[in-house]
Length: 339
Ligand SMILES: Cc1ncc(C[n+]2csc(CCOP(=O)(O)OP(=O)(O)O)c2C)c(N)n1
Ligand SMILES: [Mg+2]
Figure 1 (tube, rainbow, N blue to C red):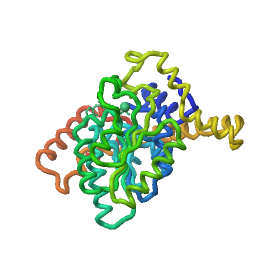
Figure 2 (spheres, rainbow, N blue to C red; figure 1 turned 30 degrees about the horizontal axis):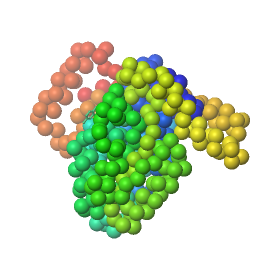
Figure 3 (tube, helix red, strand yellow; figure 1 turned 90 degrees about the horizontal axis):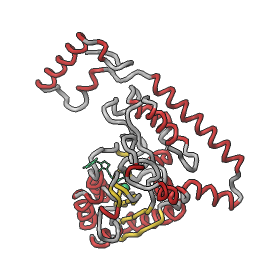
């Protein structure tokens, strides 16, 4: 897959997954301006609930390439201790709730957290990211109604990238997209060009001001295009034309930003070349380091859920211990057996 705009992280992580170095990856190509533009307009005390395609938000908050790489390899440095699939990032330090695979579950959570901030008198909001596909879930509607009736300061940030895996937006809804749904729940709503980082920033800054000052939700629908496959388990050439992809790739958000900065005289080709090379080197190094690290010990499968292990898990733990004693070759490479 080619990556317009020279996105080092997505390009190298994607290729590494295809080489079989880790199990799964999702790219954010075509939607970088939505992630970075919104993140730039938020404050560190604002709490993020993301879907899974918002790497730019984490990068903007200071999540390191090494942290991304550790998580994708599920090694011992990953806070989830390897119990989640790759791309399920989270960071307590950065006020970023861990990605949850079932679609839209983050939306009612974000509303509850926003209401809690309001009750505590904290002048901050939550930001709930979701795809237009996730907006078909009941959780979206429950969250929108709770947010507007309770007056919860939450920003609903919809990335409308045209597809829910292989289902085009034209087959997902018959109304005029997602922004209109916000209005029908009685909340301020806007639609923005999700490929224009400056427009996204301006819309988010205003939305945040409305939400925090007014104690109410705001919905932003950022229109963009998922320029990559849905995930490393998908082949989008099966359901969309090369011509459609070419047309959108010509409007790549990173290239648009590069052109604008160059036009302003703030950026040139030489700086661009250097940045691409050094970014790529940093990403490759982070992956090499993460791949060499040990996995969390086997016992982690059974910890951190119950204070006291219930009988049925004790039984399963004994079964696993017995199994790896009889079949040590089945223990994943680099995973200490502490059972
Ligand atoms: C409740 C639930 N149903 C189905 C899925 C499978 N699934 C994963 S991603 C996805 C498409 C989501 O599309 P969208 O919200 O538009 O996000 P995008 O992938 O386009 O960023 C589906 C159906 C899931 N993870 N959870
Ligand atoms: Mg989508």
